[in-house]
Amino acid sequence: MESKGVLFDHDRRARIGLPEAVFSEKKPWKVLLELLSRFRGDTPEKVLFTRLSPESWDLVPDEIKSRYDYDPLSRTAFAEPLARRDQRLGCALVSAGSADSPVVWEAARTLDYLGFRREVFEDSGVAGLWRLSDALERINAHDIIIVVAGLDAALASVLGGLTPRPVIAVPTSVGYGLARGGESALASMLLSCSPGVTVVNIDNGYGAACAAARILNLLELRLAGESPASPHGGG
Image (cartoon, rainbow, N blue to C red; front, top):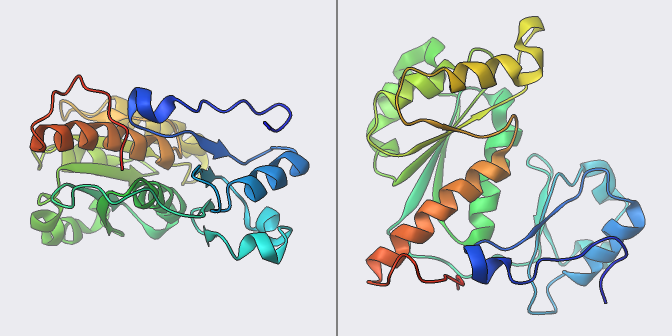
């Protein structure tokens, strides 16, 4: 029986290749607890919980907590990941600084849940360009790159000019004053002089991971010799 006020899109995975997730922030506690109880791993249904704060997690009964893999930094939880995908395909996640960690790890954990291979490259901001250049060969070994940065968000433009891979940029709400809660980073990424950089919303690591997963889904279909137009239900 559905939770009151929560109507799940059960066919989403078959339709677009991505299952529905639960955005936990500001959900009534009773609804959130019911959902955590429902998707704790003893049914075929699997769900990723995002923006699940440590404060909310502390209130969850231990018998439910024990069924979940919870990460307080990314504020994500899932009882079981989906089946592992083709490990020849992968995503690099590159962040400017450790202040961006909650967002980059939300993206990484989303990819973990979806079954995709990923590698995180933290503290690669352009203020110390050698950090990026030292890791560039390993970054380019992946099929897609997610770039996470706040402040002036110059990392998206710099990396966008150094790689042939698709780049998905995530502005973060990191920075003083004129950073305006990530609005300046968003504007900088949207104004990037590196052609073809795709930009998602401020702090939206989950959305960036889903964008990457759509591309990886398509690449996986091609590797399997299937038509890209075919519905993909995952593993």
